[in-house]
Image 1 (cartoon, rainbow, N blue to C red):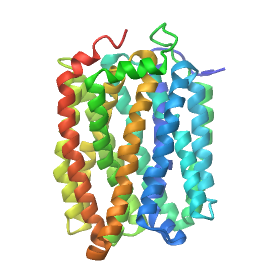
Image 2: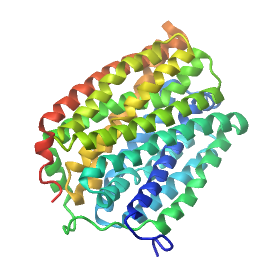
Image 3: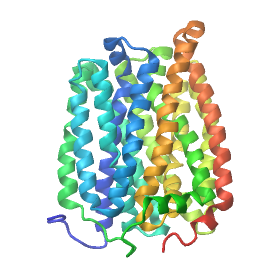
Image 4: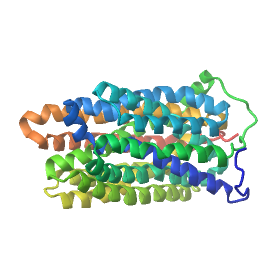
Length: 420
């Protein structure tokens, strides 16, 4: 039944990549809504910044990462097209249902459900892409998929800003969530399950853990990516609130300005990082790690400039190169992750990566900023968020860059033999 009406040929992998890109877009549109609508949600439910940080980060990420491991094990053994379809249906339906919540606890549970559905997305898609594209093109293909992060954030910002003012935060969730159900049908009907690049049926979970954690590059990469993700998620979740509190921008102004800046510069940075690292890695695969180290360290001055600028215009000028450089790390990061794993371990390798990175980076990072906001409130007022962001960004980006450089020392050796 799959793929009827779609021409099978040399361009078919590119068609699949385009569909998976759309899945990634929908993933982050749904995920980004809360960060833009944070203030009206907070005002209605009368909760603290710490609780809103938990809603946008920790509560979502904890279930997202925990459930991701068994779903990835299923993806390494079963039909990935079906798993992706089911996950897309779940997170789209629960995004729409989030708009019906009448209590903060219900909204919290609904967002945790969205996290469960989205856990089927990235590990499954990465495994499929790695079977559709050879190693020398993999970072670029994974970067195309990852561009959906920034395009999704762009549409999430714009939709939340515009629809939030026009329809209110509740109907925004409903309107944005429902189209994902149609995309799920498209995935199931037109995307073929790719041929596995190995005849090995599967690996026991203990064997996967032993294989991956015996590689120094994989272990240090988890730390590097966690610090980098903490810096990135703190900006993604708190930048709208920062611009509204400190610079007095409206919901629609924030949505449009951050949406366009994030979507265009982030997507450009992502594809640039993938293409550059693929080209440089032909000489030495350590360049995957060196590219990500450059992206982390070079973005720090712009991150500080964004937070400390006296005007919203100057802040947004800094935001553009910061987002471009942040995007550069995604393609080579996931190429390293996939290159360190054997074919039937790839989805599990991504899930383990996301388990650690989602909790420490995507979960703890935004939550810590929320806690720091509450702590700085008495001394700095609404500008306390400025202190929170500059401290978290500085520490996390410096540590991420240092860890990536350590990864580069053993990466080429640790990737040997994984493709077989």
